[in-house]
Structure formats: C-alpha cells, structure tokens
Image (cartoon, rainbow over all chains, first blue to last red; front, top):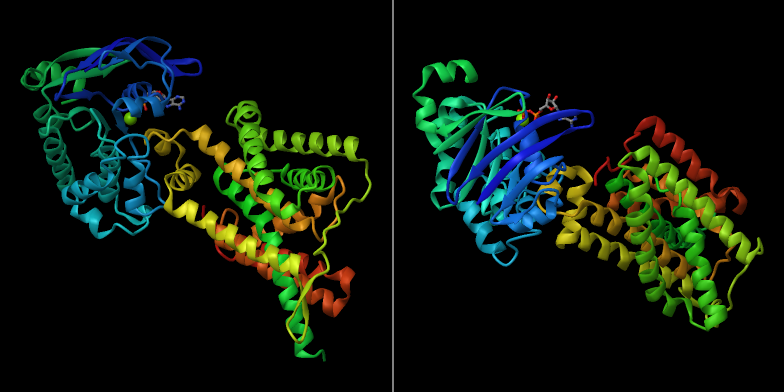
Length: 233
Length: 290
Ligand SMILES: Nc1ncnc2c1ncn2[C@@H]1O[C@H](COP(=O)(O)OP(=O)(O)O)[C@@H](O)[C@H]1O
Ligand SMILES: [Mg+2]
C-alpha cells in the first residue's frame, strides 16, 4: 500500500534522511522506532508532503505521491496525525473534528462524527469546548479523531503516547489496536519500544538517517543484542 | 447643557459613521488575525474601490448601490489574486516581507490613481443624496441609514461564514495552526488568499456605501484606515466582534467629541482612547482572538 524507496530529505543544508526503504501493507501495523532526533518526524513530514523529498520515490496505492502538496496526499487517503497534536486550540472540539473531513470523507461526516464520539466518549462530553482547554490525553484523542474523520486508508501516528501518563500510554496503545482492527493500515512512530513491538506486525529501526534494522516485530523483540545495540534496552 | 435630543441624534449619527468604520476594520482585523500582518495596502484598496464606484456611476451610469455587488466581487477576486500570485510568492513565508510587499503595493496603487485621476476631489450625484428620515427630534440621512443596515448585514454574514461553513472553519484553523490545517487537507495558500480577498471585499462594500455621501481623492482611504487601525487595536487584534463593537463605539465617540469640542476636533477623542487602551489594556477590550 505504501512503498518508499531511497527516500532522501532534510532541512536547508542538513540531510536528515539518507535513503530510506520502507513499506506498509494493507491493514498492517508497522512501527518506526529510534532515538530522539534520528529523523522519524522528518520521515512523516516527507510522506505527508510537508517537506519535499530530495530524492527517492514514495508510492501510495500504486501512485507516486512524492512531492505532492499535503492536501493532495490527504485526498489520496494518507493521513498524518502529527507529533505535538497540532489541533486548532481556538476552535471547538466538534469543529476540529469537522475539519478532519474538509478534504476527504465529507459525505460520511455525520456518521463518522458519531463513530468518533462513540470511540472517544470524552470528546462527546466536550464537543462544544475550545480544544485548547483539553488535557494532553484528550488533545491526542482529538488529533487522532480528526485524522479518522478523513477516512484514511493509511494513518501515520507520530508519537501518540508522548507526554502521557503511563496509564494513558496503555490506553493509547489499546486504542491504536482497536482502530487498526477495522483493517486500517497504521504507520506508528514511537519511542515506547516495548509496547510498539507488541502491537506492530513489523518494525523498522532508524539511526543516522538510515534504516539499521527491519523485520518482524516479534523477532526484534526477542533479540536482546539487537535491542541493546539500537534501542537502548 | 445640551438637550438630550441633540445628544441622541449625535449618538445615532456616530453609529452610522461607525458602521462604515466597521467594514474597514473587519477587513483589517481578519487579515491580521489570519496572516498575522498589518495590510498596509488596505487604505489604497479602499480608495481604489471608491474610484471604482465613482467610475461605475460617472462613466457607466450605475448607481453605487447597484455597483456594490459587482465591485465587491471584483475586489474579492483582485484581493485573492494579489495574495496568491504576488504577496504569497514574494514573501517566502516571512511576515516581514509580506509587510513590505503590502507597503509597496499601496504606493503603486496610490500613484496609479494619482496618475489617472489627478489629485482632484471627486464626488458623484445621486438623486437620494439629501433624502432623510424624520424621527421627530432629528433627521437621518437615507444613504447613511442604508450604509448602517448593509454594514450590519455584512458583519453578520461574515460571522456566519467564519462559524458555520467549511471555508470559514478553515480560515479560523489556519489562523492558529498552519501545520495542523495542512495535515487536515486544507490548502493554506488558498485560504490565505480567500482571507485577503474577503478583506478587499469588505472595503469595497464600504466604498460603495460611502460614495453617495462622500468624496474621493487618491488618498481618501487612508483616513479611514487610520481610524480602523485604532478600532482593531481597541477591539483586540484579530477579533471580529471586537472590530464591530469597537467601530460603533469609536463612531459614537467621534460624533460626541465633535458635538462638544467642535467638528474639527471630533477625532481627538479617538486617539485619546487609542493611547489609553495601549497604556491600560494593550490586548484590546476583546483580547486577541482569531
Ligand atoms: N525544521 C527543521 N529545521 C532544521 N532542522 C530540523 C528541523 N526539524 C528537525 N530538524 C533536525 O532534523 C533531525 C531529525 O529531527 P526529527 O525528524 O524531528 O527527529 P525525531 O522525530 O526522530 O525525534 C534533528 O537533528 C533535528 O534537529
Ligand atoms: Mg519526532
């Protein structure tokens, strides 16, 4: 479904990604792991069109999307829930969700809104509240909810558990499992290595702008030397 | 002590002037709230729209009220195009550059009008210019009452657009969270241009409402924008209700100051309030909201 080959991207004079190969199959959960600053967010930004790839190809459902504008990539069904949530703090929870279907999923807006309010009852309770007044966990739910409103074919989650209490982190992983159970493909970027490897089918480890390890999540989880060398465990 | 009737009449007149200020201030505050820049070309845009209404009447025989819709649409399209194809590309995403580009635009527009129309003061003749409504204690000029009504409707429509349509939601979203908006599939440059177009459209409406009772010179718009800027600061930079209420308030202040201090000193009150607000509550009476 997503096929990345030789992806190079960066900012100004610095090259952050130096040739990434990666794929996500239909309905698959794939984890991207790696320490702080290795370029996980940069990878997501290149996939969703926020920055232009300098080389390589990004194919999504058999079409090249590398270098397209973010709006066009959303239209294609690749939706990126960013690190730091990036919700609209001045707008109501409901309006935040509604905007998730600005480009895609408009006909299903009402039904999807209902589905998301069922998935996140807390958002229903706070539907008319300004999103900026939500707690961190609620804002993360809202960001995911907004992503789901666009009826994604592939959802990119960038550190959804960042800044959440341990209990909420558990809840967040359970939630990702639940939305993926409907057959939605998920590219999960995380620093929570143990939980991510439990959840994902396959995983990639990023270091120095390259993929240094890739394989079945359970194999990586079962290899202490590997985990020690690359994931600091 | 002046009779209450006279004061009430001054308040009503102030509200009507304020409604024109409101249209100019709405455009300014909307662009500020979303693009985070003061549009220095706002005054020149108002002047250009006044000339457009002037030409429509004198050359084509179209009444300013009939010209309102086409002139507004024209200025929306022009504003959209200028932001999309001139300001946006020229600014490279830097607010400072946008500021300079709008400043440059205002110089170009003003000088173009100076070249075409000279510095003469021009006005139009409409049959209803001196018609008035008798309230018993005072007369209200019909064109000014019409301006008040249209301005209020426009402010309500703008409020509705921003609250209840996808484009309006996108405008509010882009105002505060550009990256989040882009990831929701919102075309940010398009929304910037729509916002700029709405700013130009709102002064175009003001221009058509002004022309039946006002005159135009190549710098006519600047005086209005100066007052509008005061209003935008007073109401809170970026706040739509702030701009509307602030404009009506400033209109009344100007009118009452004119009554008590003499016509030519009417605007003193405005600038005293401006300084007072800057000293006491620099975020404006309604805070800074988009
Ligand atoms: N906007 C930017 N401009 C310049 N450098 C950046 C920018 N964003 C990130 N970087 C740099 O790119 C590298 C990778 O960052 P990032 O992709 O955010 O890593 P991660 O998400 O894995 O923590 C870091 O060295 C960071 O300093
Ligand atoms: Mg990151």
